[in-house]
Length: 114
Length: 111
Figure 1 (cartoon, rainbow over the protein chains, first blue to last red):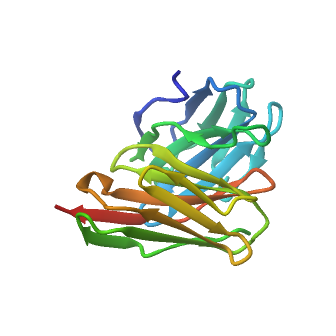
Figure 2 (cartoon, rainbow over the protein chains, first blue to last red):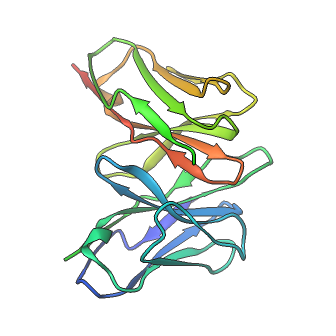
């Protein structure tokens, strides 16, 4: 049981380049999330998808776009990377209702923008 | 907007001492609260989940309490060990599905 899988694990981008962070979960969860973690700031929500076919902005959405490709996959795209987007990015999934409502996290993508 | 605060930001204790980690939140209309552990350079590992209708949850040496009306949760770790050294994060889920995190408490257990 893989849980939440993120790719890539590490990435270095030049300012202005674009990239897509991939996330897939195999727990049949409805809700998926993208967070960024910066020193001293904790985890901040970028975007989330409460269910397949819906996406909503979180606390820090500027400079990002997301796609809920299907129930399993939720991708995060940086169209024109900036040094301020250097961070560790985490994907998470969970369900609301039923017996399992824990959030499970991937291992993170460490992104450096130079 | 839900604000989650964790105090203290860092804690250093000798091995064997009990740990008490605090989490407070501003909006009591929550769905559940989850405690996580994060080791340096790693992802988040779920420790305990407390539903809004529960007062506490236990797993081994870990016990978490929830007082929704006062907006507080406490994580107790009994008889701490050096392997308990990590950052502990509290996350609150609102009824709109969002998970809001505190900045964490970094724990060092000295052998």
